[in-house]
Length: 172
Image (cartoon, rainbow, N blue to C red; front, side):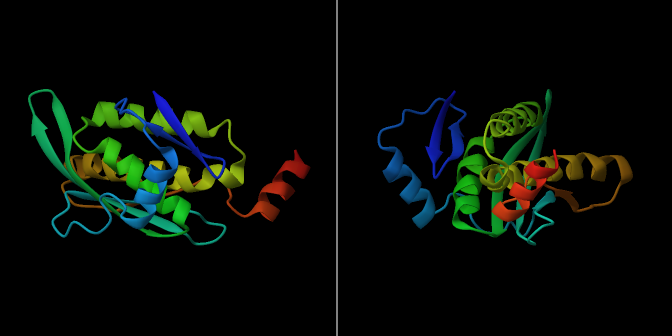
């Protein structure tokens, strides 16, 4: 697995794509984010939210069922957040497209694991995207179990508010 460090936020390349020019790639995600927008016919919608500042990421997924389980057939996201969150959304949704739920859960776990080694205020943006993807997957499974669609909202643990993160560190 490869990762990109941008503004001290770690983004990674799940499928092992060759990195040619990281700066150019990040600028590309900023200027034209992959999968940005809405899926009007989404099978499930998940939201990742930062309770400290109200930023949100909404992930829409369409799901295909096959013999071995569920697969993310299409994915889109919207963000009411900073540009770093948009870049993280572009990269993570690009990596999640076409994955089985099992592999998408691995992607989420790896993302969250990598963020444990990053300052909380710097990890919050990517965490918000990862938990939104988790909420979309869990929401789909919940809808199968309960027979009705439900949009799940997962709140992040990190804070992208440097003062708040600093105060949390002082309390430890």
